[in-house]
Image (cartoon, rainbow, N blue to C red):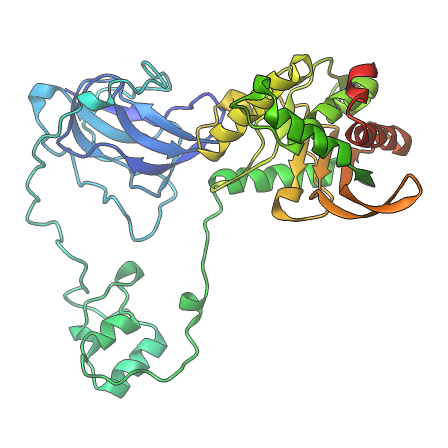
Length: 437
């Protein structure tokens, strides 16, 4: 008996995901909870374990394709059933990414649905053994080639090059998208051809088209929603962070913080938490349906993290209840998971206020856009020594520019400015974090 495994909703309420890499192929024997495939959602990379034991019969979605939740992605048969293909196999790397997975032949009994057995476990991946792959069927093409009949696909500049070199396009082996003959294919037929003069490449070769999906797609939707639903206001201030930098150095030498990453961002986070305690309205959300402003009595502190997949904003739950060391450890953990593509849905949900550190890129300041549902976001510029008047004399001091964007429906200029002034005051004199209530 064959079982179909459909792409589940992995607990994020999403509608689609991209197939990043298959961990099995047709003919492999798998056990329950063996990892079948790695997918990319709008928030994280997720490994999907097998809910069945048996032999992989067919992969129904190609790597790089975007698949809708509920679509079948793999067929698994009983171990005794072997690996007889249920229909045409999907290539591992399609010429052009498809919008959804193919459904394949009618070989399954039931879809697996959205429930995963042992979701998230990885301990059994080493048990999978690889069976011999089935021999290719005669009708399967072994290499890309131009159709036996019909017109040869090639762009006008390539056709002109072929004419100039006296090459018959029909003799070329196409390697371009969709079986298109490229310049390289033409030149391959003329080994002794002289080097080409400088030329203006065609548009396809001069541009790079990046699919809008995954994190980038989710970020774009969130930013458009925020920018056009919440009236943004941004205020700025320059802070003398010299004492903060001295405290950072002392903490790095403190045995209590051994093995813990300590950076100025840690003290910026602490300063924001102090400001939230003194100005609770900046830690709120707008509930238009019920016409109320919901002020949160807890702080889930979001940290914007640049990752290879785009910008993610994991948050530290109940950051306001943590000691400085606990906060440092938690910030490092959530940021590390985000950079590694292993952020869990819970890491990215229910944030209440956010910090974005543009200073790490050498930028002085910016006007950040609010995360949807939050009242404020703090941007921190680079901290660098500059001339500054201190105690009546011009001295080199560590300066930074802070900017606070806030939703003008919930906060007016006075409340937003007071909150930013409190953040600056704590960074100028970190002892205030101990004395202010």
